Image 1 (spheres, rainbow, N blue to C red):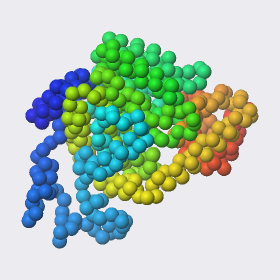
Image 2 (tube, rainbow, N blue to C red; image 1 turned 30 degrees about the vertical axis):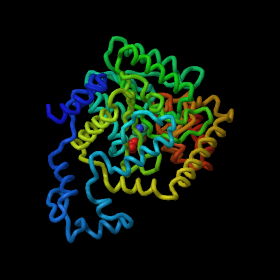
Image 3 (cartoon, rainbow, N blue to C red; image 1 turned 120 degrees about the vertical axis):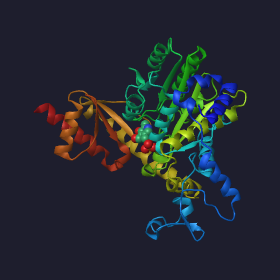
Amino acid sequence: MNPLAKELNIIIRENHPALMDMLSGVGKQLFFPKGILSQSAEAKEKANRLNATIGIATEEGDIMHFPSVMSSIKDLEPRESLTYAPSFGIPSLRSKWKELQLEKNPSLLGKQTSLPVVTCGITHGLAVIGDIWVDPSDLIMLPEMMWGNYNMIFSVRKGATPGKYPVFSEAGGFDVAGFEKSVREQAEGRDKIIVLLNFPHNPTGYSVTSEEGARIADILTDVAKNGTKVVAITDDAYFGLFYEKDTLKESMFTLLCGRHDNLLAVKLDGATKENYVWGLRVGFITYGITDNGDSPSVLEALERKTAGCIRGMISNASHLGQSIVLNSINDERFKAESREKFNVLEERAIRVKEVLADFKYRDAWDVYPFNSGYFMCIRLKTVNAEELRRHLLDKYGVGLISLGDTDLRVAFSCLEKGDVEELFDTVLKGVEDLTTT
Ligand SMILES: Cc1ncc(COP(=O)(O)O)c(C=O)c1O
């Protein structure tokens, strides 16, 4: 094992020994290399005459660049856009994102959370978490309805065993009892489980209420107290897009942080959906642990392992993407812009609810609960979802996503408010076409 990995492991073992049992084999080996990176950093500080350390090119005191490239990036300097970002992410973006996390999740105040480490979007963050915390033999609890890429990331790539927990109860709302049963059954006799929570949820657009959230956190804390190590990952891709009063407005991460030594909370969030910059690829990984011993050093050790993993995978995330996101967040228009786009999405969600309240759809489908995010789902009663999807596309030019035999996902995030009724009327026509032929 590399001596730097050993050093990090000593810090973790001495202060938070349970974390050592949660790290994967790769996670234990990870470290942040010194080598070229630290020599360059040292040179950046001290080499004021000639600095010939880093693998970029310079010219006349500036970063070498093509004007044909920079003409597309008018408001950023080459040093803010073309040069490499640190593997941890640019420091000012990391601290700004942490500040925003606190603003949006006031209960995080006083809790031990790391500085967010920048990833190339949330997908990459999930893959990094997979490397650091998931071994092939591990069990990962996923929602029964879920974003399909979890399967690719955790089951196909990492070889983890997927366990499922139900999402909705018969009465509507999150199936807390079903969640508890599945998690407790799977945790029985295991040293460690990984649990993935995703609210607002893809594909249903459901977020838990404050009460449901508190119960989920209590269940996972109790499982941890009973001796099973729990790595709880919150995928907060659609965070903040909450449209109803009873919905928990803070991340589940907030409720899971600092609850027990055997419970590690990992927050994955990003500018992707929250800031409407899908292709800029800016995501974050943040850890939350109990306040126990030297927690800041442990968090720093986890950040170093995470950045080391990123260094070995993609080296670093796009500097251009990070700078654009940072400048936008620091821009005086940012708050008003966020509010304006939130209002547009909220109005669409309300319109979808209004339209779907009409009895005319009653025999064709049920509506899954939704209160947040980009999506909602319907459960078809009489026709096959994939058959209907193809029919709607071929006959009416309407595109939806089919999930399994019965479910259709509607992304109201890309549907104008004025088109909502037409969309559902067309789906109804499609159902009628298929049932009368
Ligand atoms: C639940 C969920 N997590 C993560 C992602 C991926 O986000 P990113 O584009 O930042 O990789 C998506 C995108 O569809 C998603 O729906």
